[in-house]
Image 1: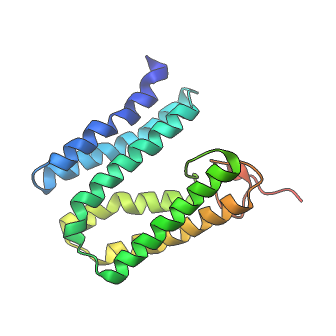
Image 2 (image 1 turned 135 degrees about the vertical axis):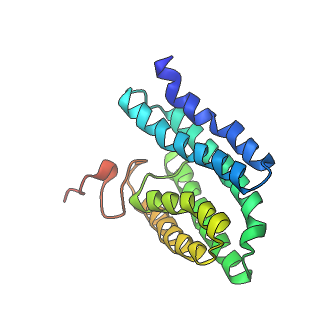
Length: 184
């Protein structure tokens, strides 16, 4: 059972995401969303602590992240009411992310996203964004998220174009896989 715990935490995001889709009101939505964030933080931490990291777990995590993201877009898009420039910016970021994933697939036979510092910062800002939007009605928070997301998407695309192999734990364009400095 202990070995399955990380994947169970990850899998819990699917029904939580469905619950977010159906939630009535901001408070139930934000509670379910907070549970999604907690399971997302705890699954990887638990997998590393129990030494049960796996390719399946990484793929399940990406799928769960996409499910939660799809629900967030569906529920928050009408509230955020982005204009055409913001929408174009979002589409450009999505295109860069897709291009990075496609590049990884074509070059290394792996479809996934890297665990860069930029992607982690984007994730943290994205995690806070629904609270900023629903509780404080902040439109400027979206600009901050998009700025960081844009840079991290371009960084990931550059990494995938230049990398010698699949390095999911690469921290930035300036480091080699697993945060090591490149050797000369």
